[in-house]
Image 1 (cartoon, rainbow, N blue to C red):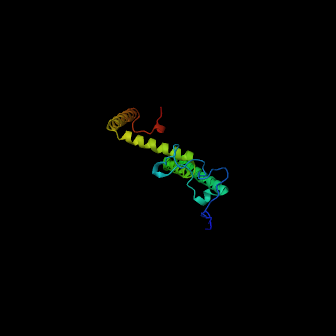
Image 2: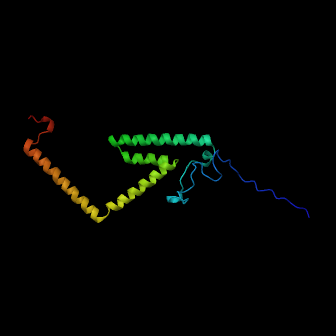
Image 3: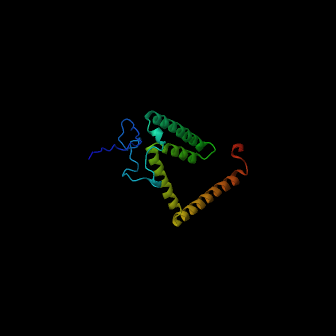
Length: 165
């Protein structure tokens, strides 16, 4: 009987980037949260870059720089929209979402923000909190109306910059 030696199946093997361990994502973090479980939506932490980009260190670094620059431009535009007309916070969170496609720190900040916004929404829907907010708004409107009334009684319907003392 002749002994046959089986050759191992040749599978598509991709080279691991320098400084990484086999099976570890390029970002250096496991695919999931700190305990290894995938995050919301079944996606773990780390780069969302296409596989061919992640496999080439120089290309991946260029990709990360591009994502950072685009995210930074969107965040800066959002900050400007805080003082100019436009949806500032929405644009800022959009820039954070762009960063979160590539950077773990941005993914963690975005998860924390989503959690806090959800908690605030649930708290705002609490009947006692809603009643308190309505009462405080009513008191604020009464105070503003009283101040406007005092102004009109004292100066009439004159604009503040036209008043001669």
